Image (tube, rainbow, N blue to C red; front, top):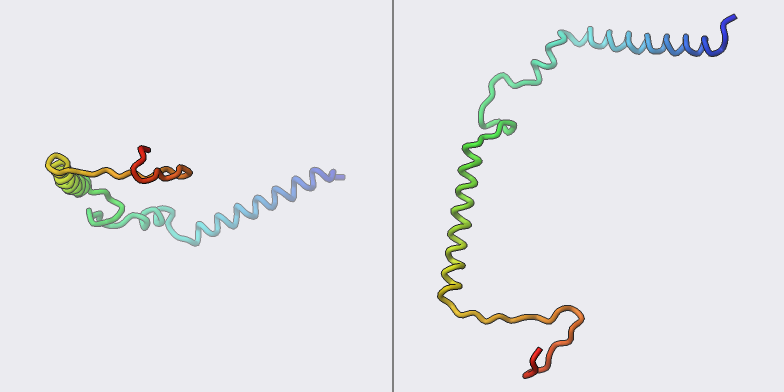
Length: 104
């Protein structure tokens, strides 16, 4: 008589064989094995595709941004060199405001 453990192992092996058979039938009915990989790739690749980075366009965008930042910094620098500024401070949270005429 076959022991209970061997019977459970046999049932498990039959189940595994059935699942592998279903997978094989599914792959067989799906068509050529290389077809899904070939369909995943586009036929022609262009630089307009979102998946392909265009390093030249990226550098042009970086240069345009740097030029814009440089012009803004030149404006700030010229204003700092030529103008007079008044700095006002606000008391930190929890500090009392000094009365008029008092030193903080």
